[in-house]
Image (tube, rainbow, N blue to C red; front, side):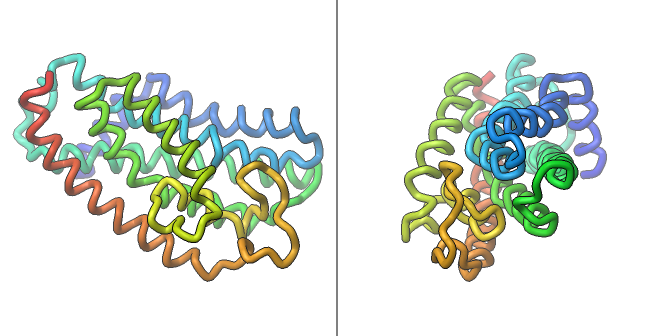
Length: 243
């Protein structure tokens, strides 16, 4: 399995996806500074989970499988390895990069915060970024599966639309736990202390409560396992028939 993960990371070494993992946090930080000045932390974190991170996950996850489609899946079909292991390797490889992207954002935003104005504590920022990492994992195999059956552009557009619309509509609703796209935005409220639209949360707001964080995280991780199992089976069938 480590060999498969290493192979997938090597495939991405000189790709736009790998550059995006490094550039996206820096662009987010610059955007936050240009728009909010000394409140760069709040702005950067808000842009990250509301728009930049969904874009990065959509583009990079889609790119991982579109490369295989261009070769008619021959690089996968010819391997003496089960499809589910290949699928797991691809998912794990980008999950590592997803972790790196969130960690880079936290490091850069924390450092800049000390130079400008600390609006999110280093610990809250780290917890928030790691929660985003964990609650986005399920989207990796799901987007790859969409690309396998829909194509690159439709899959990316569907993913972006679902993230932006469902998170905005469902994050503050009572039923947010039933909407996986809404969980990442809602779960970071107690740590970033702002609404999805960037407005700071009012003191005493129930949205600042962390009582739902653990249940939401567990639901998201269980959903990731379900999505992985289902998508790997569908991919193993579609991989032979959808060149």
